Image 1 (cartoon, rainbow, N blue to C red):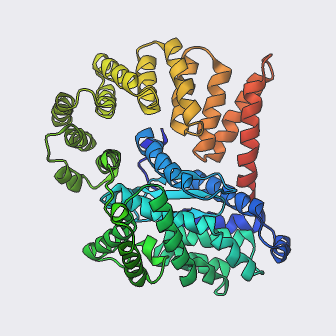
Image 2 (cartoon, one colour; image 1 turned 180 degrees about the vertical axis):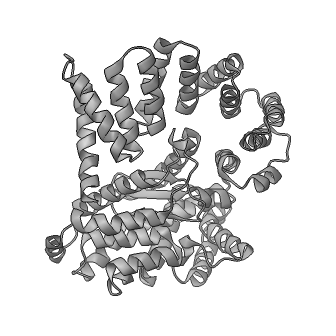
Image 3 (cartoon, rainbow, N blue to C red; image 1 turned 45 degrees about the horizontal axis):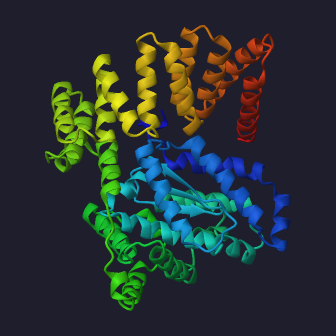
Length: 470
């Protein structure tokens, strides 16, 4: 599953891809369109293309405990906005950078490093509220209209440079765009002040403690000093942070006491942060975090110990987690996944079924349950669980691959090749995609029902167009 892709590819790869692809996706003739202004439709198309490029080049965290949490947080903020022409979408990128950003069209990207290093939900909400304000005020479109010689392609490259952060990303973007266009990499001071002002309003309207925006910026600055690095990527692309923090603090002091003194329940934030540290954080640092005897700490410890292949100790930690939190669906799911990987199918069966009963929307638990059924010879039962998981994560390469192997065991050869093609397609493996697609097409030509193949064919053509332009 996508949330099991531990090998993190660098943002540089995306920048390089954009450098070569964008001039072909957006030819020079498109420049003229800027003299008439940048429309909402243009922004939506720009954001959609950037989203496709990110998802085809970088690992995305699809674990529902994480993705649904960020989605719900974003939805809470969006409800506080005035009516918008955009449909906002949140994506969690597996990368340890302290970064988050939004692109035109309402696409919001949050890096796991940002979540792992903040302390409270309102701090994350402050960062996202600020980014939403850039989108609602169409700051990127306004800058494009003032610099009429720019194309959508060069703007997308600028966004990628901001996303990469640090001197490497900026340097590559500048080299591809030219020194004059590289000025587009940063928002202006006026844009930042407006985003702070409106972002704070959005936070307040959404019911968050307003100090969260200031708190988030302070944590990020502190983390950069403690690590001995320069200012984090997020703050480096948002200038004059010290002055802006002071301005925000002054504004917050003018708010009514009931607003200033709001409290935020951080239980879900803590769960997500625990899971991310356990799964992706430095192992020694994570173990120090998980020294407690509560269910979440013991679960986190079990995940880290399993990563270190200390299986007996991991098993004891999961037993402790289950004893401390027997009704926690996340603990049950992670313990079930551990015993599945360990080969104890009987134990995995009971734990995963309990997890699904407590949280029917946890498609990760359903995925492991489907694999458990598959490996114990129950392909017919596994089929419905794989299909259900794909309703939630239709572009997850690992789910498609597991489902394909299950279908192959059940003798459903056409469907097996269809899902192997999807797996290769969403893994961005051009050679394998073409090979599996040809095999699927040959089988579909002999089948009375071609609808499933026709859906695959449409997805294949869309991705092939991108590959050919690259």
